Image (cartoon, rainbow, N blue to C red; front, top):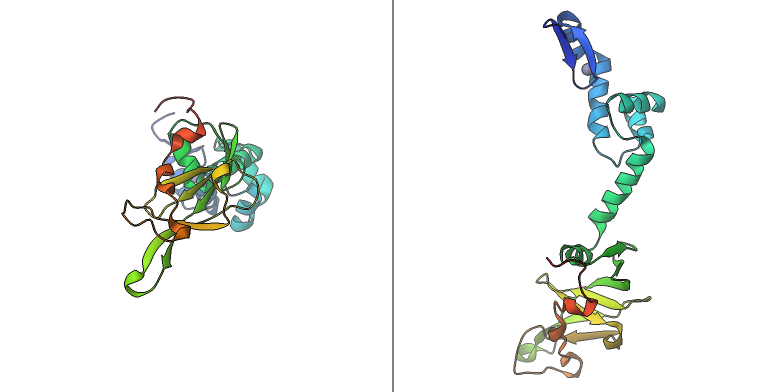
Length: 207
Ligand SMILES: [Zn+2]
C-alpha cells in the first residue's frame, strides 16, 4: 500500500490519511473495537454481543468473519471446552498433570483410566472437650456410583480411597503421625492413602 494509506487493524479496512482519522473517530470503528474485544472471549455468543452493542446478529457474524474469528458454532465448542477445563476439580487437573487420561463427566467426577473418580472435600472436625479436644479430618462417603474417591485435604493433598475402603457414611481420621490412635471413629489410618496415585493405575506417560 502506498505510504499515504493507513490500515485499521481492528476493522481490517484501508483508508487514506484523512479518511483514517475520520474512521478512527467513527461510531463504526468504536463499535468494531468493542465487538473485537468481546469476540476475543469465546464464551459470549454473537447474539449476546449484538444485544450489547445494538447491532444485528448478522452484522456481528460478518465482522467476526472479516476479523478472522472462529464461527459461532466453533466458538461455542471452544467455550464449552474451556469452561469444562476451568471448572474441572483440582484432583482431575492434578491427575492430568501426572499423565493420567482424564475424561470429565461433571465438575467433580471424571473417568481416570476408565475408572469413575469423584472429588470431595475433607474438613476439620473437633472431638472432645477442653484439654481432651482433638482435631481430626472428617470425610463423607459420596452418594452415587464411584470406583475411587479423592478428598481434598486442607493442606492441598489428596486422600485417595478405592470404593471397597469407603465403608462409612462419615468418618474422621488423624492426618498426622501421633502416638494417640484417637477415638474409635478416628483410628483409621487413612493417611497411608494420602497421595497414593498408584491406586489409579499407571499414567499414560511418565512425567
Ligand atoms: Zn476501525
